Length: 80
Image (cartoon, rainbow, N blue to C red):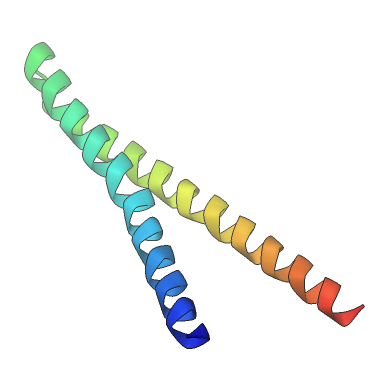
């Protein structure tokens, strides 16, 4: 039972990483397409795509940092 729970937690984490990356990229890209059509400047889509990518990487970094810190705290408590 414990092994299945670990697998489920890992699967959930992979899904979270994917969503944290995909959502900002898609939203910024769609917004860039919409704005680009409104102001007749489609190159803004590329800029907003890059901005979404950076936001996604930041989200993943913050999530990984929090997970690492939580694991580090658990290990420190176990060793006491």
